[in-house]
Length: 214
Image 1 (cartoon, rainbow, N blue to C red):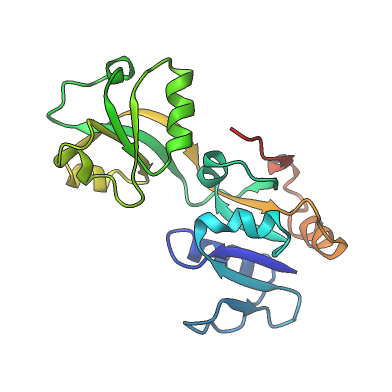
Image 2 (tube, rainbow, N blue to C red; image 1 turned 90 degrees about the horizontal axis):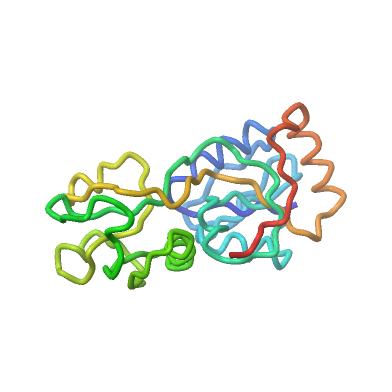
């Protein structure tokens, strides 16, 4: 059984700790290794880029994955969301400069918003009947308002520290996110037994549903 987790970033340590708590005693990590076997041979942990995890699960390269719920919301994947895991909580928010006159959602009409989550932002704008330009940025978006590229940003916020350091204030929440457990639709008997064992007694948190596309 293979489980994909984040190779580096805010969900990595929480994912490893969770798997250890589920009884997967992992071998010592090698800094360059992409696979971490459990000492009993029950599983292999696959370390990959965060946004690639759903694809590894979708195509059956891994049986399970731990990923931010925001990644599933941004794109359509054929995977099943099994459980919300309660760590890695954050929110996708819209923020504007402190000096901006914009203070509510309706005032975004006709403005430019920079984001690394264009699909999520477009869906939210449509739901709120706001006609705004979406500028897709692959990296950090905070500089876009300083340099005049955008009037606001849409980005993940965990503590708000980065926003404050860049003179930005949140004005709206697009969605809330946390780490979730996903599984392939081609689940094996071994994986099914593992899930029943580790999730026993937590049925109220088990979703076991297909992820809905945008």
